[in-house]
Length: 64
Image (cartoon, rainbow, N blue to C red; front, top):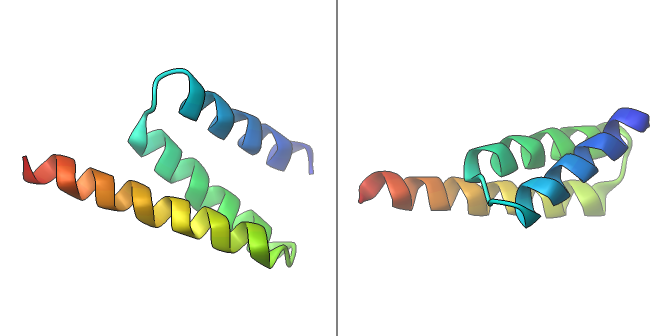
């Protein structure tokens, strides 16, 4: 559980300091998987939506 708490902390830092879309996407993906493994479906779904949003942002940036 300690590593999951560190993931959440890393995500918060990535969002607050200098939004790094790739890092946020990777952390969201990891949190989604961990939450799913522990049966925390609401968190898994939320992290999945965050991951989808990050992927969409990356695609938009790549298209420019």
